[in-house]
Length: 174
Ligand code: GNR
Ligand code: NI
Image 1 (cartoon, rainbow, N blue to C red):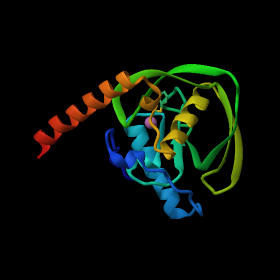
Image 2 (image 1 turned 120 degrees about the vertical axis):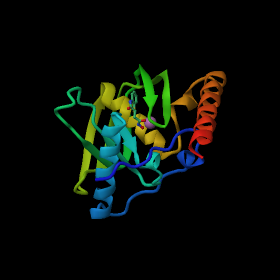
Image 3 (image 1 turned 45 degrees about the horizontal axis):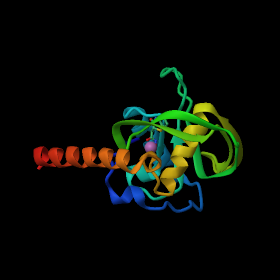
């Protein structure tokens, strides 16, 4: 397993729409293993393939509170088939928007269909943090970041800050 580099805003790759996977084979499983290791290393509770620069419809999650007890979840070609009418507000963060957090409203539960690590068809009813995370990750597959839901002013302040940080880093690295 390999830790891959996580792309950060503003990076145009993060705005690409990811393409469906046609077969869950060993190459896809290798990618999912790398994504999981990259996510644990960050650390984060979810990761979409596009965050490591791969425009495929794949997400990994682990929302278990105990870092000793790993509960990895893999979703290939995930699709929300139903969302509840009730919204819930969570303070969201994103590994591609480092150090920035903001409240976002999303449906508090949803039903998702997807292919698992073995390529088998599954359906899952997600609630609470899991529902929020799955929706956050599926947004990545459409090129959407949580900052897109904030006011223009809040979003532009965050993007400005991140651009500045990137430029400063480049100056040090190069
Ligand atoms: O690690 C993460 N935490 C998080 C917290 C609240 C809502 C969503 C998330 S997902 C994020 C990891 C990430 O960027 N996934 O795309
Ligand atoms: Ni994210």
